[in-house]
Length: 423
Image (cartoon, rainbow, N blue to C red; front, side):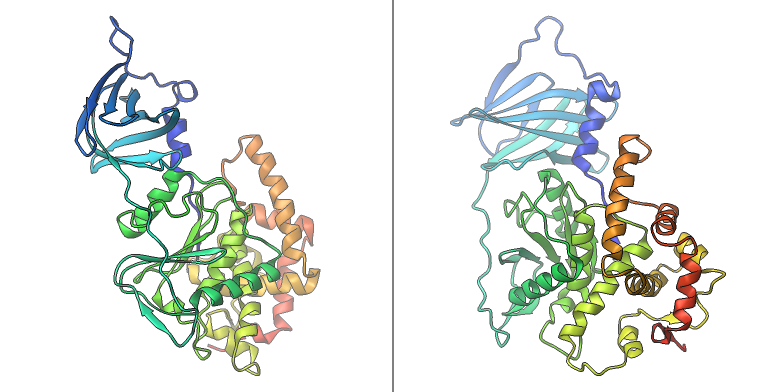
């Protein structure tokens, strides 16, 4: 499953920008516009008002409330550590205060306690040591279970794990192997890109309700994979902000050839696809992931003689007989089904058809063309994201390949019964 998010921090900065949004901050005292400073100790709650500075005793640290925006309830602040400055925002909500950072503050943590009009109550503390990665043997015969929040780290991947997660000692080497296979099949590479620390924090708190891994790879240089039970695997990946995906404990069972665990491969494909640029409609997104997932899994499948239809059925990738016809193929694509689970088999079959008909670079060419379209639309302010709509996808497919591409796809299905189940 693939989901998209936008950057909270960019949105907030745009909202609180007095110039960009026409908002006016609460003015400082008319008689004296000079910033005044008071001192407080680490770990002590303090109150700060607009244009005031609080210094932390026995340190070179200070916090300044630069602006308060009454209309939105946002507080624009700066923490200064010697000559370095770190900008952050506090948003006052009914349920409490939320912190949004531009970048990681290495030595100090800030807690927003409460807000009351112009008054904001904060606490500054020294950071504890950054958590260290859990050490494992690398052997399939060794088994582990996390007793607390733990993470594993390899050359390209970090697994952030909840408490009580069971896994084998060769999990990282297996995932690294699968990542290389996915990169080879898709032609897409993991890219290091800009990541706001605020998004890093927001998503970690959303997943665990806390920041147990605060300080670990805050620049998102590696692929972040969160492992948590009772969740459906899904991916949040964008070109220019924090990207990651979620899987559960079942998806770590990588040494059981009879029960192929496909979640890491599937979500990794989404990650590489959308963190590199254009996202399409759900049929194309899921179809591209499913198409390459099946290609990868064929390599790891124990019984290579299994029939295609049975193999596809294992993952819910077969269409019903008569489900897609020349008459409805395009309308199904545009509407993306009312039952979202059906986008997987349609997308899988469609992407297979596309590659078999137009060559191994069929998706790559589509991807490149979509980037140009979206760049133009964003520049013209027609859209403000990297998603191409179903209508836009259909238009591009017809232009790039064939005006009758959907009817041609339905005809192709009639000659490829391995994509059809009798149920």
